[in-house]
Image 1 (cartoon, rainbow, N blue to C red):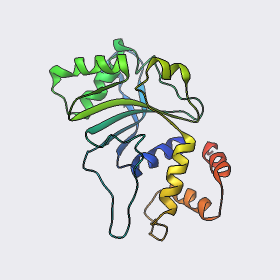
Image 2 (image 1 turned 180 degrees about the horizontal axis):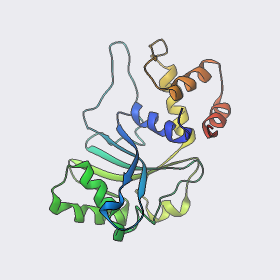
Image 3 (image 1 turned 45 degrees about the horizontal axis):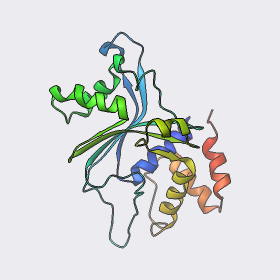
Length: 209
């Protein structure tokens, strides 16, 4: 099981909202002389994504999902207050955003600098087909961050726990989950045992040895 259960919560929250994910994305030092930077999670969701197997309907969280574009997320995960690492992902001289955009691979090389500039300034960029945005996941909000970057989503643990709880107890409670990882199987077991929000939160905030 992952040593960081909060990051795994975010992974499954994104997964159930239709995002493909890369955990612990590293900006390698051979791209620049500065130390490595890391995004806790990168994710992408395509606009036609849906998951409605016969007999079931799985909801998506409209606070997160942008349904009409291909949506790329650079995610920062915290167990406390939401935050962005301004020394790396907020520092244009390091070119970490450019590195991530090159890896995403949907932009011509000549557009990367312009798009990166918008992301450094506003924490997001979008056109009629694509969106690239930074998203904070944490236990509670950051007022300063919200004031400085009003378009920056801050998604809280209670919202993600509630979303997963409903996803795991509505319609699909009899589906087989043997192929899921140990984290989500353990969370399912706690829910089936009748654990409430406070117990689930305490379990998620624990660190594994």
